Length: 250
Image (cartoon, rainbow, N blue to C red):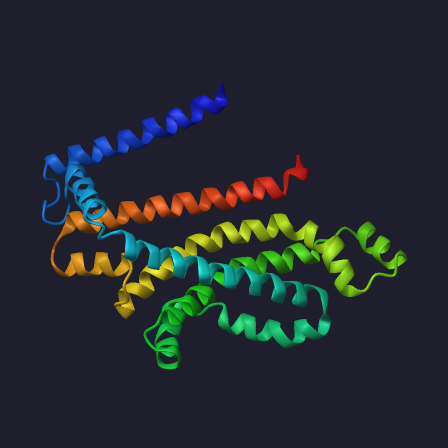
């Protein structure tokens, strides 16, 4: 019964929010030039779908987001495992990580443009830089949190550090890693759209930027709807993957 009730409540809540949006727009609490009614926003979205204007920019945004996010996940897990498992790697990587971690991705964008130019590779790099930190920190915490009994078992079996990391530390670290990955994929979407806007590269971000410059508020809200739906679907996909791979947790 609960499995049915919660989705129904979620739909009711969503419809209620759209209804409040409609009431606020009709009451002209904000100038309609800046705050369109939902029918105008969904109408603009339908026009994008009908004419095919949406698909290529959306494909570009999704490609850049996933390429950067997957790169961040691979690098974050590898570097996090090294920092947590090896004093030498910790001395080598941790100072640089602590120096780079507070930097916003937007600060790296000009350097990336100088080195990589206005290209997909530039945006992918910036996305990877911006979204690596939750995965890296999750991996460090997860690899360090191995139970002492398992450490003793690995010593009794005379496992190498790599064997211990693969057979004991990685499974124990997966919950922390997936928590970081869920946060990271949201950051990847945000950085992708911001990078597209700042670099004027084709994507959903550039669609919204052009709409803003033309005072087409309905198109801006249509872009927000697209990005909200994309964020929801990607987070749900990562959550489903986590539930499948970590079903042993019960």
